[in-house]
Length: 347
Ligand code: NAD
Image 1 (tube, rainbow, N blue to C red):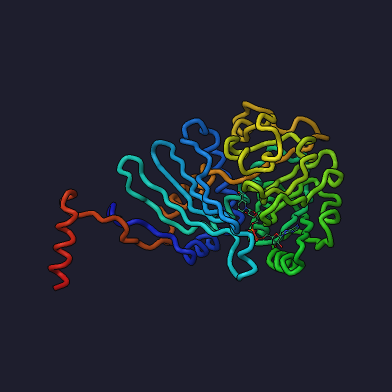
Image 2: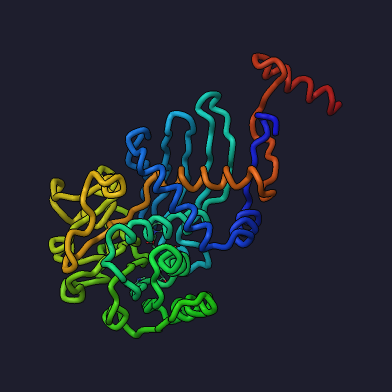
Protein backbone atom coordinates (compact mmCIF):
# COMPACT_ATOMS: atom_id res chain seq x y z
CA UNK A 1 0.00 0.00 0.00
CA UNK A 2 1.34 3.49 -0.86
CA UNK A 3 2.52 5.45 2.18
CA UNK A 4 -0.23 8.04 1.79
CA UNK A 5 -2.91 5.34 1.99
CA UNK A 6 -3.63 4.24 5.56
CA UNK A 7 -5.30 0.89 6.35
CA UNK A 8 -8.51 1.62 8.25
CA UNK A 9 -10.28 -0.98 10.40
CA UNK A 10 -13.95 -0.10 10.69
CA UNK A 11 -16.20 -1.50 13.42
CA UNK A 12 -17.55 -3.94 10.85
CA UNK A 13 -14.07 -5.15 9.92
CA UNK A 14 -12.99 -5.36 13.57
CA UNK A 15 -15.97 -7.62 14.25
CA UNK A 16 -15.05 -9.76 11.22
CA UNK A 17 -11.45 -10.03 12.42
CA UNK A 18 -12.46 -10.98 15.97
CA UNK A 19 -15.08 -13.48 14.78
CA UNK A 20 -12.66 -14.99 12.25
CA UNK A 21 -10.03 -15.69 14.93
CA UNK A 22 -12.42 -16.10 17.89
CA UNK A 23 -12.56 -13.61 20.81
CA UNK A 24 -10.78 -15.92 23.25
CA UNK A 25 -7.88 -16.47 20.89
CA UNK A 26 -7.66 -12.72 20.17
CA UNK A 27 -7.57 -11.86 23.90
CA UNK A 28 -5.00 -14.57 24.60
CA UNK A 29 -2.80 -13.26 21.78
CA UNK A 30 -3.25 -9.61 22.83
CA UNK A 31 -2.25 -10.64 26.38
CA UNK A 32 0.90 -12.09 24.80
CA UNK A 33 1.62 -8.79 23.01
CA UNK A 34 1.03 -6.82 26.24
CA UNK A 35 3.33 -9.17 28.14
CA UNK A 36 6.03 -8.71 25.49
CA UNK A 37 5.70 -4.91 25.67
CA UNK A 38 5.64 -4.87 29.50
CA UNK A 39 8.92 -6.82 29.43
CA UNK A 40 10.51 -3.91 27.54
CA UNK A 41 8.68 -1.26 29.63
CA UNK A 42 11.75 0.95 29.91
CA UNK A 43 11.99 1.44 26.14
CA UNK A 44 8.62 3.28 26.00
CA UNK A 45 7.77 6.98 26.35
CA UNK A 46 5.35 7.19 29.26
CA UNK A 47 3.00 9.89 30.45
CA UNK A 48 -0.28 9.88 32.38
CA UNK A 49 -3.07 10.18 29.82
CA UNK A 50 -4.27 13.65 28.92
CA UNK A 51 -7.79 13.98 30.32
CA UNK A 52 -10.48 16.56 29.66
CA UNK A 53 -13.15 16.29 32.36
CA UNK A 54 -16.72 17.50 32.34
CA UNK A 55 -19.58 17.08 34.82
CA UNK A 56 -20.80 14.01 32.92
CA UNK A 57 -17.64 12.26 31.79
CA UNK A 58 -14.12 12.39 30.48
CA UNK A 59 -12.38 12.46 27.07
CA UNK A 60 -8.80 11.23 27.04
CA UNK A 61 -5.78 10.91 24.75
CA UNK A 62 -3.34 8.09 25.47
CA UNK A 63 -0.01 8.34 23.61
CA UNK A 64 3.17 6.27 23.76
CA UNK A 65 6.12 5.27 21.57
CA UNK A 66 8.80 2.59 21.61
CA UNK A 67 11.05 4.62 19.32
CA UNK A 68 10.02 2.66 16.23
CA UNK A 69 6.26 3.10 16.35
CA UNK A 70 4.05 5.72 17.94
CA UNK A 71 0.47 5.04 19.01
CA UNK A 72 -2.38 6.88 20.60
CA UNK A 73 -5.97 6.20 21.55
CA UNK A 74 -8.86 8.62 21.83
CA UNK A 75 -11.30 7.33 24.46
CA UNK A 76 -14.27 8.66 26.40
CA UNK A 77 -15.94 7.56 29.62
CA UNK A 78 -19.53 8.74 30.15
CA UNK A 79 -21.40 6.60 32.73
CA UNK A 80 -24.72 8.37 32.00
CA UNK A 81 -24.57 7.49 28.28
CA UNK A 82 -26.24 4.07 28.48
CA UNK A 83 -29.47 5.71 29.72
CA UNK A 84 -29.49 7.62 26.41
CA UNK A 85 -28.81 4.52 24.33
CA UNK A 86 -25.11 5.38 23.94
CA UNK A 87 -21.97 3.51 25.02
CA UNK A 88 -20.16 4.48 28.25
CA UNK A 89 -16.81 3.95 26.53
CA UNK A 90 -15.98 4.48 22.83
CA UNK A 91 -12.56 4.74 21.25
CA UNK A 92 -10.45 4.85 18.11
CA UNK A 93 -6.70 4.78 17.71
CA UNK A 94 -3.75 5.23 15.43
CA UNK A 95 -0.34 3.66 14.95
CA UNK A 96 2.43 5.56 13.14
CA UNK A 97 5.98 4.91 12.02
CA UNK A 98 8.48 7.03 13.96
CA UNK A 99 10.93 7.15 10.99
CA UNK A 100 8.53 9.10 8.77
CA UNK A 101 5.77 10.13 11.18
CA UNK A 102 3.30 8.64 8.68
CA UNK A 103 0.34 6.69 10.12
CA UNK A 104 0.32 2.98 9.33
CA UNK A 105 -3.04 2.07 10.91
CA UNK A 106 -6.26 3.80 11.92
CA UNK A 107 -8.78 1.65 13.72
CA UNK A 108 -11.94 1.55 15.76
CA UNK A 109 -10.97 0.81 19.35
CA UNK A 110 -14.28 0.46 21.21
CA UNK A 111 -14.26 -3.31 20.70
CA UNK A 112 -10.46 -3.40 20.82
CA UNK A 113 -10.47 -1.61 24.20
CA UNK A 114 -12.83 -4.20 25.68
CA UNK A 115 -10.54 -6.95 24.34
CA UNK A 116 -7.33 -5.38 25.60
CA UNK A 117 -8.80 -4.45 28.99
CA UNK A 118 -9.95 -8.01 29.57
CA UNK A 119 -6.62 -9.38 28.26
CA UNK A 120 -4.75 -7.09 30.68
CA UNK A 121 -6.99 -8.09 33.62
CA UNK A 122 -6.48 -11.78 32.95
CA UNK A 123 -2.74 -11.34 32.44
CA UNK A 124 -2.50 -9.57 35.82
CA UNK A 125 -4.60 -12.30 37.46
CA UNK A 126 -2.36 -15.01 36.02
CA UNK A 127 0.45 -13.49 38.07
CA UNK A 128 -1.58 -12.54 41.17
CA UNK A 129 -4.65 -14.75 41.66
CA UNK A 130 -4.44 -17.68 44.09
CA UNK A 131 -3.34 -21.01 42.63
CA UNK A 132 -6.19 -23.02 41.17
CA UNK A 133 -8.76 -20.20 41.22
CA UNK A 134 -11.78 -21.30 39.21
CA UNK A 135 -14.64 -19.07 40.41
CA UNK A 136 -14.96 -15.35 39.67
CA UNK A 137 -17.54 -12.84 40.88
CA UNK A 138 -18.30 -10.38 38.08
CA UNK A 139 -19.91 -7.24 39.47
CA UNK A 140 -21.12 -4.85 36.77
CA UNK A 141 -22.49 -6.70 33.75
CA UNK A 142 -22.28 -3.97 31.10
CA UNK A 143 -20.29 -3.67 27.88
CA UNK A 144 -16.96 -4.93 29.26
CA UNK A 145 -18.38 -7.87 31.22
CA UNK A 146 -18.49 -10.74 28.70
CA UNK A 147 -14.97 -9.90 27.51
CA UNK A 148 -13.72 -10.12 31.11
CA UNK A 149 -15.45 -13.47 31.66
CA UNK A 150 -14.09 -14.98 28.44
CA UNK A 151 -10.54 -13.72 29.00
CA UNK A 152 -10.45 -15.21 32.51
CA UNK A 153 -11.81 -18.45 31.07
CA UNK A 154 -9.21 -18.62 28.31
CA UNK A 155 -6.17 -17.22 30.13
CA UNK A 156 -6.68 -18.11 33.82
CA UNK A 157 -8.79 -21.26 33.72
CA UNK A 158 -11.86 -19.72 35.40
CA UNK A 159 -14.80 -22.08 34.91
CA UNK A 160 -17.59 -20.49 37.00
CA UNK A 161 -18.70 -16.83 36.86
CA UNK A 162 -21.11 -15.39 39.41
CA UNK A 163 -22.89 -12.37 37.93
CA UNK A 164 -24.34 -9.32 39.66
CA UNK A 165 -25.47 -5.90 38.41
CA UNK A 166 -27.81 -3.36 40.04
CA UNK A 167 -29.74 -3.67 36.79
CA UNK A 168 -30.98 -7.28 36.35
CA UNK A 169 -31.48 -6.59 32.63
CA UNK A 170 -27.69 -6.25 32.29
CA UNK A 171 -27.12 -9.54 34.14
CA UNK A 172 -29.65 -11.28 31.93
CA UNK A 173 -27.96 -9.92 28.78
CA UNK A 174 -24.56 -11.04 30.04
CA UNK A 175 -25.77 -14.54 30.95
CA UNK A 176 -27.48 -14.90 27.57
CA UNK A 177 -24.37 -13.79 25.66
CA UNK A 178 -22.15 -16.17 27.62
CA UNK A 179 -24.39 -19.20 27.30
CA UNK A 180 -22.56 -21.70 25.15
CA UNK A 181 -19.17 -20.35 26.24
CA UNK A 182 -18.48 -23.37 28.44
CA UNK A 183 -18.63 -21.21 31.58
CA UNK A 184 -20.92 -22.13 34.44
CA UNK A 185 -22.98 -19.00 35.15
CA UNK A 186 -24.85 -18.04 38.32
CA UNK A 187 -27.09 -14.96 38.48
CA UNK A 188 -26.84 -13.39 41.93
CA UNK A 189 -29.12 -10.99 43.80
CA UNK A 190 -26.39 -8.91 45.46
CA UNK A 191 -22.67 -8.25 45.33
CA UNK A 192 -22.25 -10.22 48.57
CA UNK A 193 -24.05 -13.21 47.05
CA UNK A 194 -21.88 -13.01 43.92
CA UNK A 195 -18.76 -13.27 46.04
CA UNK A 196 -19.70 -16.55 47.71
CA UNK A 197 -16.97 -19.06 46.94
CA UNK A 198 -15.19 -16.70 44.49
CA UNK A 199 -11.40 -16.56 44.61
CA UNK A 200 -11.37 -13.70 42.07
CA UNK A 201 -13.59 -10.60 42.18
CA UNK A 202 -13.90 -8.37 39.12
CA UNK A 203 -15.60 -5.03 39.63
CA UNK A 204 -16.59 -3.50 36.34
CA UNK A 205 -19.23 -0.89 37.18
CA UNK A 206 -19.71 2.61 35.82
CA UNK A 207 -20.75 5.45 38.08
CA UNK A 208 -19.18 8.88 38.30
CA UNK A 209 -18.71 8.88 42.06
CA UNK A 210 -16.67 7.43 44.90
CA UNK A 211 -18.80 4.28 44.98
CA UNK A 212 -18.51 1.38 47.42
CA UNK A 213 -19.18 -1.71 45.35
CA UNK A 214 -17.14 -3.74 47.85
CA UNK A 215 -16.88 -3.03 51.59
CA UNK A 216 -14.08 -4.36 53.75
CA UNK A 217 -16.05 -7.16 55.44
CA UNK A 218 -16.98 -8.63 52.04
CA UNK A 219 -13.41 -9.53 51.04
CA UNK A 220 -11.91 -12.66 52.56
CA UNK A 221 -8.22 -13.62 52.80
CA UNK A 222 -6.62 -15.01 49.66
CA UNK A 223 -8.88 -13.13 47.24
CA UNK A 224 -7.65 -11.46 44.08
CA UNK A 225 -9.53 -8.27 43.16
CA UNK A 226 -9.54 -7.05 39.58
CA UNK A 227 -10.87 -3.49 39.94
CA UNK A 228 -11.65 -2.24 36.42
CA UNK A 229 -14.32 0.44 36.86
CA UNK A 230 -12.52 2.98 39.06
CA UNK A 231 -10.49 4.86 36.49
CA UNK A 232 -11.03 8.58 36.94
CA UNK A 233 -10.58 11.22 39.64
CA UNK A 234 -13.68 10.95 41.88
CA UNK A 235 -14.70 7.57 40.32
CA UNK A 236 -13.76 4.54 42.46
CA UNK A 237 -15.37 1.23 43.44
CA UNK A 238 -13.68 -0.07 46.60
CA UNK A 239 -13.87 1.00 50.22
CA UNK A 240 -10.55 2.47 51.35
CA UNK A 241 -10.17 -0.14 54.11
CA UNK A 242 -9.88 -2.89 51.47
CA UNK A 243 -6.96 -1.04 49.93
CA UNK A 244 -5.23 -0.86 53.31
CA UNK A 245 -5.41 -4.69 53.63
CA UNK A 246 -4.29 -5.41 50.05
CA UNK A 247 -1.04 -5.81 48.17
CA UNK A 248 -1.66 -3.31 45.35
CA UNK A 249 -0.44 -3.74 41.78
CA UNK A 250 -0.70 -1.00 39.16
CA UNK A 251 0.17 -0.23 35.56
CA UNK A 252 1.86 3.20 35.63
CA UNK A 253 1.89 4.76 39.12
CA UNK A 254 1.84 8.46 38.05
CA UNK A 255 -1.44 7.81 36.18
CA UNK A 256 -2.97 5.36 38.70
CA UNK A 257 -2.37 7.72 41.62
CA UNK A 258 -4.60 10.26 39.80
CA UNK A 259 -7.23 7.85 38.46
CA UNK A 260 -7.21 4.54 40.30
CA UNK A 261 -8.56 3.22 43.59
CA UNK A 262 -5.32 4.45 45.19
CA UNK A 263 -6.41 8.07 44.73
CA UNK A 264 -8.01 7.38 48.14
CA UNK A 265 -4.59 6.70 49.72
CA UNK A 266 -1.55 8.78 50.65
CA UNK A 267 0.53 9.67 47.56
CA UNK A 268 3.44 7.58 48.85
CA UNK A 269 1.43 4.45 49.75
CA UNK A 270 3.50 1.51 48.44
CA UNK A 271 2.36 -0.11 45.20
CA UNK A 272 4.05 -2.61 42.88
CA UNK A 273 4.35 -2.00 39.15
CA UNK A 274 2.97 -4.93 37.21
CA UNK A 275 5.70 -4.84 34.57
CA UNK A 276 8.20 -5.63 37.33
CA UNK A 277 6.18 -8.66 38.39
CA UNK A 278 6.14 -9.80 34.76
CA UNK A 279 9.92 -9.42 34.38
CA UNK A 280 10.53 -11.09 37.76
CA UNK A 281 12.04 -7.90 39.28
CA UNK A 282 9.24 -7.76 41.89
CA UNK A 283 7.15 -10.35 43.70
CA UNK A 284 3.51 -10.99 42.79
CA UNK A 285 1.38 -12.88 45.32
CA UNK A 286 3.59 -13.94 48.24
CA UNK A 287 1.18 -16.10 50.26
CA UNK A 288 -2.12 -17.87 49.96
CA UNK A 289 -3.93 -15.61 52.46
CA UNK A 290 -2.82 -12.33 50.90
CA UNK A 291 -5.42 -10.09 49.24
CA UNK A 292 -4.02 -8.94 45.91
CA UNK A 293 -5.55 -5.99 44.06
CA UNK A 294 -4.99 -5.08 40.44
CA UNK A 295 -5.97 -1.39 40.43
CA UNK A 296 -6.64 -1.27 36.67
CA UNK A 297 -7.09 2.07 34.93
CA UNK A 298 -5.87 1.20 31.41
CA UNK A 299 -2.49 2.46 30.20
CA UNK A 300 -1.29 3.61 26.78
CA UNK A 301 1.20 0.74 26.35
CA UNK A 302 -1.72 -1.78 26.44
CA UNK A 303 -3.38 0.10 23.58
CA UNK A 304 -0.06 0.21 21.74
CA UNK A 305 0.18 -3.58 22.12
CA UNK A 306 -3.39 -3.99 20.83
CA UNK A 307 -2.70 -1.70 17.85
CA UNK A 308 0.49 -3.60 17.10
CA UNK A 309 -1.49 -6.86 17.25
CA UNK A 310 -4.12 -5.62 14.79
CA UNK A 311 -1.41 -4.25 12.50
CA UNK A 312 0.27 -7.66 12.47
CA UNK A 313 -3.02 -9.48 11.77
CA UNK A 314 -3.60 -7.28 8.72
CA UNK A 315 -0.43 -8.69 7.13
CA UNK A 316 -2.42 -11.87 6.39
CA UNK A 317 -6.09 -10.99 6.92
CA UNK A 318 -8.19 -8.77 4.64
CA UNK A 319 -10.11 -6.83 7.31
CA UNK A 320 -9.17 -3.23 6.48
CA UNK A 321 -9.94 -0.70 3.79
CA UNK A 322 -7.59 1.87 2.26
CA UNK A 323 -8.08 5.38 3.61
CA UNK A 324 -6.87 8.37 1.61
CA UNK A 325 -5.72 10.17 4.74
CA UNK A 326 -2.31 11.69 4.11
CA UNK A 327 -1.85 14.49 1.56
CA UNK A 328 1.24 13.40 -0.36
CA UNK A 329 2.07 15.56 -3.42
CA UNK A 330 4.63 14.20 -5.95
CA UNK A 331 6.84 17.16 -5.06
CA UNK A 332 6.62 17.18 -1.26
CA UNK A 333 7.00 20.94 -1.10
CA UNK A 334 4.29 21.59 -3.66
CA UNK A 335 1.23 21.05 -1.47
CA UNK A 336 -0.55 24.08 -2.90
CA UNK A 337 0.26 22.94 -6.43
CA UNK A 338 -1.51 19.67 -5.70
CA UNK A 339 -4.60 21.71 -4.83
CA UNK A 340 -4.29 23.68 -8.08
CA UNK A 341 -3.93 20.50 -10.15
CA UNK A 342 -7.06 19.10 -8.49
CA UNK A 343 -8.89 22.31 -9.38
CA UNK A 344 -7.74 22.04 -13.01
CA UNK A 345 -8.87 18.41 -13.16
CA UNK A 346 -12.29 19.30 -11.71
CA UNK A 347 -12.79 22.18 -14.24
P1 NAD B 1 -21.37 -0.01 31.11
O1 NAD B 1 -22.01 1.28 31.45
O2 NAD B 1 -21.68 -0.68 29.82
O3 NAD B 1 -21.65 -1.08 32.28
C1 NAD B 1 -21.53 -0.75 33.64
C2 NAD B 1 -22.52 -1.60 34.43
O4 NAD B 1 -22.31 -1.34 35.83
C3 NAD B 1 -23.98 -1.27 34.14
O5 NAD B 1 -24.66 -2.45 33.70
C4 NAD B 1 -24.52 -0.75 35.47
O6 NAD B 1 -25.87 -1.10 35.73
C5 NAD B 1 -23.57 -1.43 36.46
N1 NAD B 1 -23.48 -0.81 37.77
C6 NAD B 1 -23.40 0.51 38.07
N2 NAD B 1 -23.34 0.69 39.42
C7 NAD B 1 -23.34 -0.57 39.95
C8 NAD B 1 -23.29 -1.06 41.29
N3 NAD B 1 -23.22 -0.24 42.33
N4 NAD B 1 -23.32 -2.41 41.48
C9 NAD B 1 -23.40 -3.28 40.44
N5 NAD B 1 -23.47 -2.86 39.16
C10 NAD B 1 -23.43 -1.52 38.91
O7 NAD B 1 -19.79 0.27 31.22
P2 NAD B 1 -18.60 -0.63 30.63
O8 NAD B 1 -18.21 -0.19 29.28
O9 NAD B 1 -18.88 -2.07 30.89
O10 NAD B 1 -17.42 -0.15 31.59
C11 NAD B 1 -17.42 -0.53 32.96
C12 NAD B 1 -16.41 0.32 33.69
O11 NAD B 1 -15.09 -0.04 33.28
C13 NAD B 1 -16.55 1.81 33.43
O12 NAD B 1 -16.42 2.50 34.66
C14 NAD B 1 -15.40 2.12 32.50
O13 NAD B 1 -14.96 3.46 32.62
C15 NAD B 1 -14.36 1.15 33.00
N6 NAD B 1 -13.33 0.77 32.04
C16 NAD B 1 -12.07 0.59 32.53
C17 NAD B 1 -11.07 0.19 31.67
C18 NAD B 1 -9.70 -0.06 32.22
O14 NAD B 1 -8.75 -0.26 31.47
N7 NAD B 1 -9.53 -0.11 33.52
C19 NAD B 1 -11.32 -0.01 30.31
C20 NAD B 1 -12.62 0.14 29.85
C21 NAD B 1 -13.63 0.53 30.73
